[in-house]
Image (cartoon, rainbow, N blue to C red; front, side):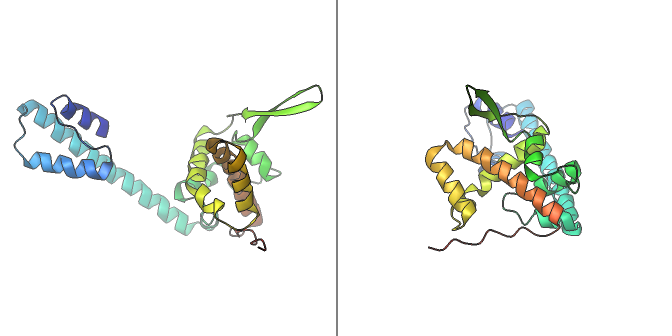
Length: 207
């Protein structure tokens, strides 16, 4: 919707910012000015702006509903204690796996989500390939987004997880580390659901 707004005005020589908040402010300012465009184009712009506002209201209503569900559901609250697992990831995980009893261990959940690397063995040597990308695509993508948002947090921690992230960052591409962290988040989520308790960060290592 915002891309459509920018495109319509760009064709008429008006360049708008990409950030949503700046774009919204600039659009409101433009509607207050005397735009040198046809009445038909102006009506189109107003309709796009109104539809954008309507979508924002609907999205906020869904966000509020998910937040309420998370507050009321004990398992969702536990999942939300994990860095990188917010309201959306917590409710999506519960909807997909319930109490995770269908998985014998955390790695099984990560594999079901398609977050574990494929293996190729030849001549007695095993080589890790890319992730399988099987299973629940939506959850996999959401966990990767969560891992991307939480990676800096984990990397700053003076514990085993923080050390693991820092070592990976030193030898692998950032995107590879993000996917590896997403797999770890899936395993942590499995442990939280199966053990029925909040996430507890690992004990900090002695300096």
